[in-house]
Image (tube, one colour):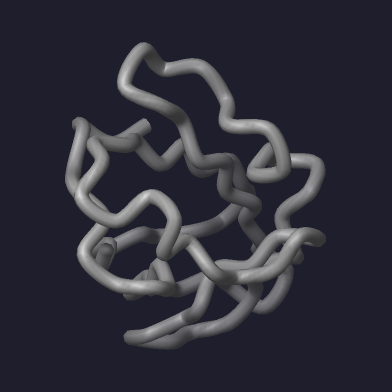
Length: 88
């Protein structure tokens, strides 16, 4: 789980590397570390690959612009994954 950060764009991007059998899922948390409805781990589209700008998306979509300027946290769970940075 990241430290709080402010959303500044309409998409969250990750610099991420999963091994061939690795994967990850992400959840968006509010300021009090509670999951934001629609942005749960179980709603996250599978993250797999090696990308410097992987666009995180959920079943509800990838648009996080409604959180622009708000403080959020990103919780990531996966297997054989390395996260290098988050671009909010």
